[in-house]
Image (cartoon, rainbow, N blue to C red; front, side, top):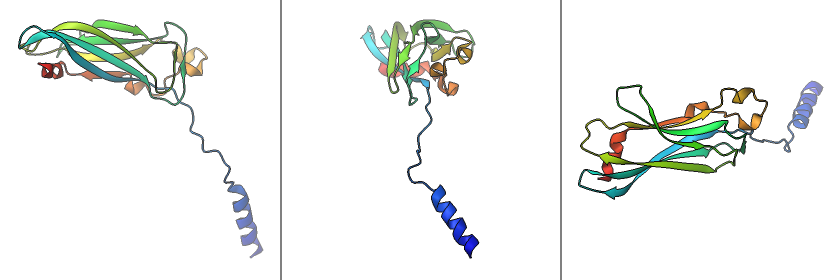
Amino acid sequence: MKFLLASICCFLVACNSDDDATVPSSIDLKADAITYEMVSQSSATTGEVRIRGHVKNVGNTTFSSTEGQQIAYLIERPQGTTTETVLATANLPTVLNSGSEITFSYTRNWDVATEFQNDIILRISYDPDIFLDGNPNNDDKNTNNNSLVLAGNAINSLF
């Protein structure tokens, strides 16, 4: 019986209600969205569209790096190929607070009569040694969300 009481006392002492339940910090730049809008329409099937890439820090900690170590691309890739054409780039800021976003864009002519529209790709790319530079404030915790693809035929819905 004494053993049981001693065990319960030790358990109660170990269960301190003041224990911190803090969430570990994380930095996660995400290829968040690709949006598009009509700039001008020249016919029922043609016009000029603006395509935007949205990169967001979805982590709970500020991203802090040095100039030129991170860049985002908006790319077009014809369906069925591996050929990619970069149409816009954005040097990501050296500081991006949790929840903050950067947006960049390009404008191009669009024709819905094109049978196979190019895929639009938003991609975040880092300097190859970013995880080895000794700065934990620029280490992306989730590299699986650094690329996003939009089927180009989705843009046809603008017409």
